[in-house]
Length: 109
Length: 114
Image 1 (tube, each protein chain N blue to C red):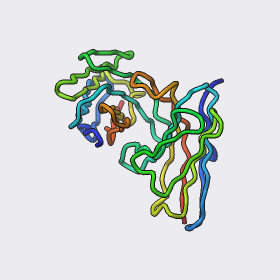
Image 2: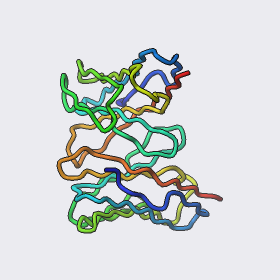
Image 3: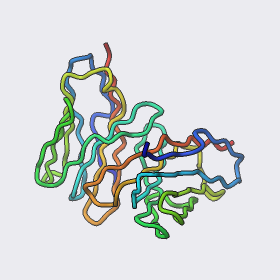
């Protein structure tokens, strides 16, 4: 079953922060985050494994709470280059990896 | 440069015709995947292969077929049985299919059936 992402879309001004959430109804082994710019291939951002770890990628970080089956992606001081659609992907135990529907992020000057 | 290549970028076909999308990787990855992306939706898994000469159905395999005769190649055939084939198709590969491995995506093939 596909994870749920919220919000569906968000518009920011340069320098503002944003949080994208991803939740699953099933117990997860890992959560992946990808960003896709319009007409391009998705690009890997980070993987979080169970254990409540946090990871960072430049000014983008994420957390994973396996008890709540949730992950959040934090974008700090957003830049124009952050615009795109962000997908979380989850891997329930014993099941195929599945992507969420995506969150469209637009960063305006 | 290592990477994953899909061809063609755009493909037009008449309804009722089978069409094959190419996916080649030179990353020496064992696992390869095919996803379908529709506007406003996420990526849905069609087929995946963990190793040469082996592949498994994903969530939306009906109307599609694949082969994995070589490690570097994983072509996808969209058959006439696929009821709504117009979509953006993405191929990906990873070192293996473990939970801690990132996927590398090709640039995609946009298929339009008229």
